[in-house]
Amino acid sequence: MARIASRFARLESRRLARDAVAGLMSGLAVKNCWTLAEHAGHDSPDGLQHLLRKAKWDTDGVRDDLRRYVVERLGAVDAVLVVDETGDLKKGAHTVGVQRQYTGTAGRIENAQVAVYLTYASTAGHALIDRELYLPRVWADDPDRREQAGVPATVKFATKPALATEMITRALDAGVTARWVAGDEVYGADPKLRKTLEDRGVGYVLAVACSHPVRTGVGKIRADELAARLPRNAWQRLSAGNGSKGPRFYDWAWISIEPEPGAVPSGTLGQRWLLIRRNNATGELAYYRCWSPAPVPLRELVRVAGRRWTIEESFQASKTLTGLDQHQVRRWTSWHRWTILAMLAHALLAVLAATERAETPTPPGLIALTCNEIHRLFNTLIVEPIQDLRHRLHWSTWRRRHQHRARTSHYQRREAIPA
Image 1 (tube, rainbow, N blue to C red):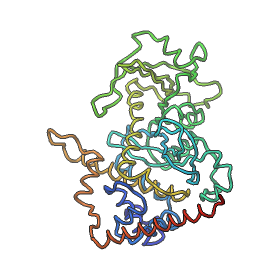
Image 2 (image 1 turned 120 degrees about the vertical axis):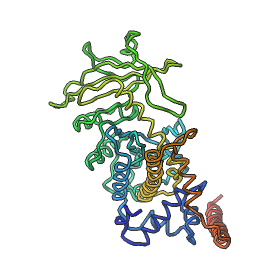
Image 3 (image 1 turned 135 degrees about the vertical axis):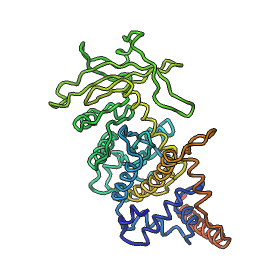
Image 4 (image 1 turned 90 degrees about the horizontal axis):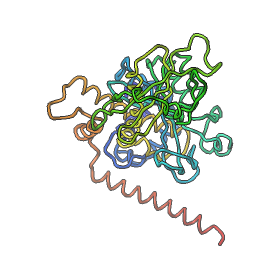
């Protein structure tokens, strides 16, 4: 918390932020302003709600401090920036950015809020370092909805790859050292993102669809058609990294491809490949478009492709352990403040786990400490929620009073509607 102290205009706001992060790291089953305030010993959630909505503090500055903290503690020469989006299911239509859209969280089209995140991943560990809320065009083009949700006038509609490009550029401009970027098909299909990375000299391994066209010496051809022409000896069995059940072995093949005409400025030609992964059990194929400023072995591309899954682990841990998706806020500023505090809490767990693994040999018969286990130990040995009976009864009364007012208001509104 000392790292971000200078970002707050008032001592009270700084203390509220500390209470919020401690609550987000707690073992509370549900994390919102009500439960965090009760956990911290506050009389009501008013202070935390003020912190998220109106208090004066530099949210972007905290983001920069978080990024610096993660890179300092988890930094390594093999680092990969991983980009992906995740959705939070929401009811109603007033929460900023919410609309019916596809989200991988549900695996279908649902009423949801979608955001793009950036993870810093190395052999030491991985943690989220940036995020951008996806504002659908129906929101971006609606002045009334924008005003109600507090969307700044400077925010325009941007695609998910454009948001990813913005975050990656911001990280590189801040001095983050990363040789590679990884992402799924949404990002691999975007030529502007690929060109930005090539201009910066940053390699990429980006997934693409089976129908994605690539240019070879004989012309343009679909990725799946090119894969079908490969001889049997073109495949090599390599591990994409260790999973929970051991090394993740797949069959891999790679094919040199050519740049699109006029898409590459002089001096950044580099090396291009189509990387193909085959599941040993099902035969299912996955495709990646790759670029590197210098030649690299196949094993390196496979390693980067395997790192893409670290962002899924970051999503799971930050949602399960630090309440990333449990916010009950509607406005633009509140969303950005909640997410950065949840990311800060998750980063601390990730750094603690990485530090313990690096500095303390794991005893025989045990696995290394994970974020989940660090979370349990932190709450068992360090964090002690207030157990005072009077405090608990006060909050029971507060909740019932607030819910009574809300119910009465709903009833009055219904009764005022003509039959």
